[in-house]
Length: 369
Image (cartoon, rainbow, N blue to C red; front, side, top):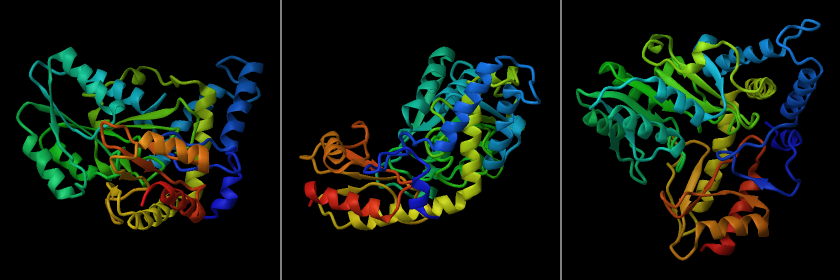
């Protein structure tokens, strides 16, 4: 994969080093062109019926079939949404709990994947149980054991992230889903940081529901996402999206999302994953030379993804460093939310190369020893 050639597909400033895809992916020109083209078509003929053999609304619905090829599921199990949070909200609101029923989750969930359960707990007088995933905790077996130990006869839902947003830890979703099914519990997954980042096959994972966005690692239009509900969970999880086959999002954005997914399929997600993790591992090796920081993401290996985070010394504020890297070095990274730790997160993607990582490490040495 030639990152130099791929970079020309984007409108990024030529001197900008963008290492923040986990927050918001840049949109390729082909995606922008498809949105504009579809918008012009809709402006010329704003109706549901076909003109000259083209129905933009029908074409938007066919994006579900494209998404299903990427996600390894049936198109009937997918609907288009506006974001991961939108999808998680729809899943949670569609589940009916009784007073005293319990929802099992972790203390490392993104707000967009956890607010919905707090809403559900208030609405149905349910109880949230939380399992801790401590910093530097990469042991899949130990995490699974803690989840298993927290299950009781009233547990109705297990909800976890596929990839932990703050550290990039890859969670053992297939084993968690198997544990949930063994106990007759619904398994719901926040996949915001997984789709387009790592290879995902929803049928192999075995979860009942999955939520993701189209504008992070897929680099599709802002305001797009997917919601998945497995066939065998369709009676227990019934989001309003299933009441209407037509897309609930702007059809022009849906078509842009389809273009973005086709690009990922053409490059091959396995190739993309290997490229991104190689860059992440290069950064990991370079960060080990900075003695005053602490890497909080997994070491190279099966638990790692393209997300890499590190904690800063107490006398160096993460937001200050983020601004300095952007203004002085033209590097875009994320300051991790302070509720997690005082640190920086990077997330390289297919348009990045080794020189971007080396520029980051060189810039960090100005502020960190």
